[in-house]
Amino acid sequence: LLMMQKEVAERIVANPNSKQYGILSVQSQLMATPTILFDVPPQVFSPPPKVNSSVIRLLFDKPPLLCKDENLKTIVRMAFNQRRKKLSNALKRLNAELPEDIFNFNLRAEAISPDGYEKMTAHFEQLGTFG
Image (cartoon, rainbow, N blue to C red; front, side):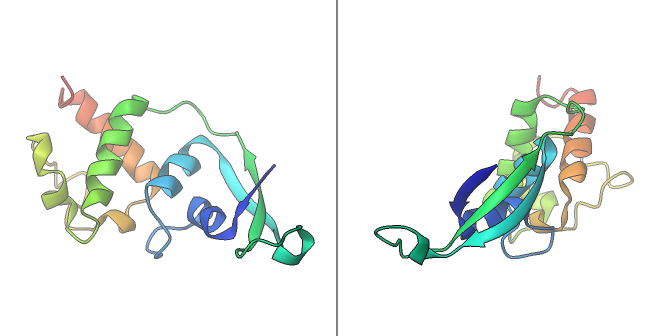
């Protein structure tokens, strides 16, 4: 169990296609199953902070990644650093052929599930994209 700022907890548990969904969401959800258990109002602290807090549970029940963690971080960072661009443009720096028959690279970063990023990274590893 962890207590943190409510906005951070919401980013950890965020679903694809939501405003809060990002790098933290993808990486957290590939390692664990996060759940917000309850909110903690500022007035229970002394002095009260200017933000709300949430208690979250991280259940580390996920299987090992299908790809190397550092490669996954590279792909996710590249995608979300240009989150308003299509993946085909955001991933150009990879200098790899984007297999349109396997993945839809016309989507934006926030539309891809954590599992999608994992599978995409594993596929790029099989192609030898990371050296």
